[in-house]
Image (cartoon, rainbow, N blue to C red; front, side, top):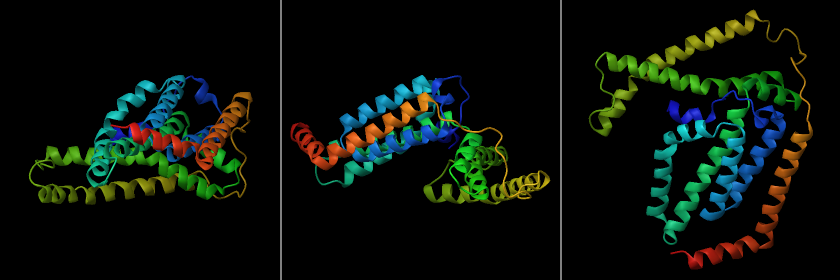
Length: 258
């Protein structure tokens, strides 16, 4: 679980992508996600993945993404197998497309979270007019997801050291064994939530309605270039889809697909 979540954990690097405004990176995230949903064949989805890999390389996070990708292999295999076993026709084509679509979507979010700190995200949300309470709730939920995975691994290791065999036996026995994780994990997280609440109270959170940000976000030339590229990508793919050109290309691929 922790390996899967490493794909979305911020990695501090000195790169052009890290230096971008979080709002421009969010627009890029929307564009890449929309492209993943519009495209429906493995060839163009693979080209989109190559574009995302180039962005990760520019962010100096390609190695981290490749290392964390091993945690997604099981999920990708399940998606491929479910589509291949349930579809009535074009099984291989559609199964590959659905698997590549999931990978493209995961990579798009990975680009954003690998290069954007929770503080930058919170500042961007507050600059967009979102109330500070909701901003804090959203960013803390994202920040503590990897922490929850680490706590789960800590509790599992503690139970294994006491003789509980979590990964042995049949499916029912494994599920019963994993139930023993819930009680200590819930207590663990309740204690953490109380500590966070006390820390917020000690720092006077909510005492002042309007708080001046630590630093102001400013869009630069590179940010506008990324926004323009993202808008152009969405517009181009929407035109291909609505005009029927992409549908014709998709039918041509299906006709020649083995």
